[in-house]
Image (cartoon, rainbow, N blue to C red; front, side, top):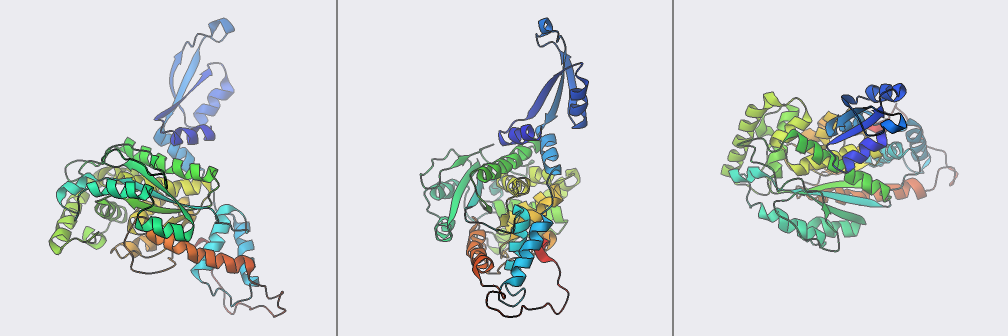
Length: 425
């Protein structure tokens, strides 16, 4: 049943329906215990086989999502202890690689082995348009989203060039770009389009709750497909004109903070443009806030399909036990939404850098995550996440290849003060 629910989410199904012979009481009890609702008793034409009546049970996509998320398991404490022990034997001062050591330990816990391997890694870029651009909150029009997404499939964007150097495979996903896209051969487009952009949330909710659930499921699906292909690390990125506005709105609502505190200039707004952006977000928060009962509602009302898809990627990392790298402000907002939906998913996330957007640090603090670097980056596309991967590679070189104190016959360092087990940050 768990397999069926995951498969239904991956295929974008709206409902799972099961049938069972009405007198098969063990199966009836199982379905009901698993949360499936009785729908009807019907004749399936098997009366000649002595099976005249069948009970039908069903579960919606959202109920399947909740069921899948409830089964996210903790990190492996045994693997983390062994990884921590490995670090203690490496011939260098204790804890001297800081957060890099902590995150290697965390990856061990995620992958359930101290033999950490991130040799095959992917960047998922969720691409979509946002109706809120109608309100003049961006410097460019939404037509840019399609152009840049197509360029990504050709390998011709900032993050693609960086990914080539870092040995990262790029997977652009059209989850809601405002027109149909061609695909280049370098990084073939993954087509998960749910709509041609969202609605203008200044006038109406950006999307329905059902669409938000479908977008989250699409992100989980992409993560699962990459796990099946042997990927061991996922970086997150996005492309969508207007998505700093949607992210600021979502973050403000999830953190219950003043929109002015959460909103930056994005790709280069003037002072007047920034004031307009804050005003639009503040009005939306006031209007929709009382209606939102959880993170899915928040995304549906003021978010974007790219944000919802990235939320699914973070949740998929936890479901399929793959570490997922947070990029900057936008993917950080998606990470926060994922953590609100499934707190256990937080342990499967790694922060890479502190975005230059005003809320960048606030989001990481809320998630309890520490970044590798603070480089003042705010390009998006996953550039910060990809830039951090060589640092992880270098840490793993030390972790796997450095001589131990025993090898060089030198007494090991001893901790002089109690150290917090930082593997879960």
